[in-house]
Image (cartoon, rainbow, N blue to C red; front, side, top):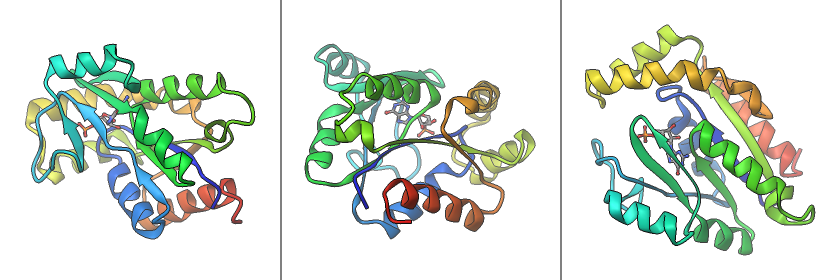
Length: 197
Ligand code: 5GP
């Protein structure tokens, strides 16, 4: 597959992480972009694997030093994509998968649009929004996964509508009703974009 810069966004609980995991299992040539965040680790999350868990000061320093490709405040915490690993992966012919929010996706879209037309990051850019079948289903999934406090679930649901309102900004939209169907659609999008289909 030709190198792709894959940006995936979704309201929390739409199944994006599961879809990302399936992609990473099937395509070893895709590197997951590990984000920085100021939020505390959840469940089994590991520093350097799921996120780089930073203090607010350290996050601000990285931002100030221009080390982040994009950053945003999501559900009250700071999140950002380290720029170095994205460039390095591309230089090695790898694709990069970024799991970021709609604000971050907009920043990356703008960043990519400002690159020369022949820059591989621009040529390989693909943005996909994963949609839950409904807000009610989203609530059930968030409660069911048992990882977030009731307050956190409320914040995530309140933000979900705002994110869904921005789904039209994405080139592709995939409704995650049935996981296997959603995964096949996602895979086809990437294979077509990567020149394999
Ligand atoms: P969570 O706290 O559930 O892991 O993530 C909350 C939200 O932050 C998700 O929508 C996720 O996509 C987004 N997010 C994770 N990393 C980044 C990042 O580096 N930049 C931006 N803009 N959003 C991120």
